[in-house]
Image (cartoon, rainbow, N blue to C red; front, side):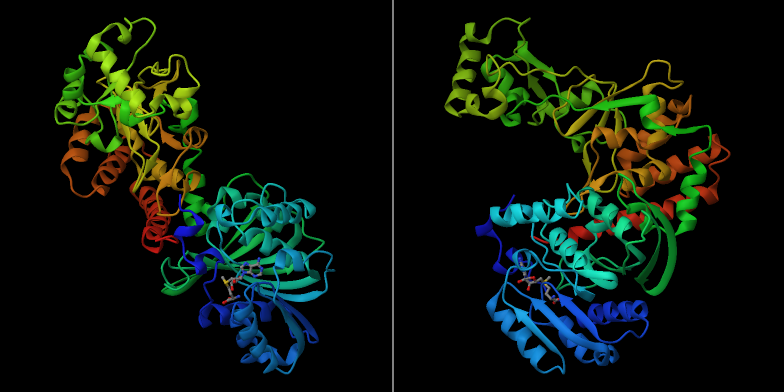
Length: 543
Ligand SMILES: C[S@@+](CC[C@H](N)C(=O)[O-])C[C@H]1O[C@@H](n2cnc3c(N)ncnc32)[C@H](O)[C@@H]1O
């Protein structure tokens, strides 16, 4: 995680300005909602050098604007915005203030909000602003939403300054749709706004903006009923439009990035008897937390040097070290002999004490020299070197993935650390571990991983165990017969999609309802979401 000193001033204040094309679309969307109203009072809560003010000046709605209030924390930029305001034939003021303070005690007195709120991560926000953000969110009944990024309180406070019926068009990071932390904001919006429209853009369309953005437009309404039709326009090549009825929920809005026909296909396959919720057939959980993987995970040479063989248990250090869908004992030994840390040191109470063995004692002394006992997880256990080892599971699943999460059948009975979950098939389920692995890497399951998982800067997909449980999986007794062939494809093909294509083909053969057309629609949907996510790798905010 970067500190304040390591990122530029522009990033610290979220100072990336809106390109004209986005400003113009915001004004067009708002104009549609304003329906020719005049005498408008406009709020721009984080004005920068005045991109929205210039946008109003050159648009037809300029004639309908009576007053503009803008806020900007940086004096130099506020002065530029004030110059723009002076050149407009309207009343108004640019306040060189922190909008979190400016908003305190202000009445809802505006008809129109235009904004591109600052995108500043929590760790870079001052303690005073964190406190103000919390107060703003809880004052509006959107508790739990304030802490992840500055755009959230600025967005909420701006909308709260609209009169009933006032309209807004706001440029937001796409994490508004896909981020877990924006959940309270989404639900607040459904309860307080109508006529919602979201404009989506191909990731990377605006290189100067850096993070992936969308435009959210709508109308503040006391009569909103927590369940709205939201209209989507996707500006990726030609514009494609669709609507979803969206209700208050605990999940993200990632699935609404898909047009309804793809969402409908996903809904339809859920009722196929051979498709189930992963949590109904298997359970994945967190594996061993050592507190110092570099010290407790070792290779064969180190075992020999310190005579530690007695305490070594076979380990898969990283999912990338398993090339296929089956991990064997031979592969584990090859890894350890090739200098990979493929042994975990387990100084369990049931084994002899390492302190009584000369070379092993030396390794413990080396740990003391490296200050391993002072590390958090080691400090809280007695003795510091006794790692509570979580026993091996029959299945392994990468916690984070680039293209897609991979399940591996653990034939080697290796343990893992915190980057790989361990899994087992539940008692009474009609399948075995190898059936599960063989059927897992298909377009349906991978699409549900894109929808249920979380993605952070850099485009990596992460699944926590509760999200893993919600994945949709085909439950196919006997699929294990195909595992050797799929394992071979996974090991030998350069194209990682080859495994998904082969698994899809197998499923269409074994489950008649999952026909080629349906799998094709699910595959397109998965690619839509995955491509968006992967694109973030190229549009890193803290590059
Ligand atoms: C993403 S830029 C957008 C600027 C302009 N609205 C535009 O669309 O080009 C966000 C702006 O918010 C300003 N800002 C950051 N924190 C602020 C705060 N607490 N109060 C007011 N402005 C702030 C930054 O200096 C920056 O100019």
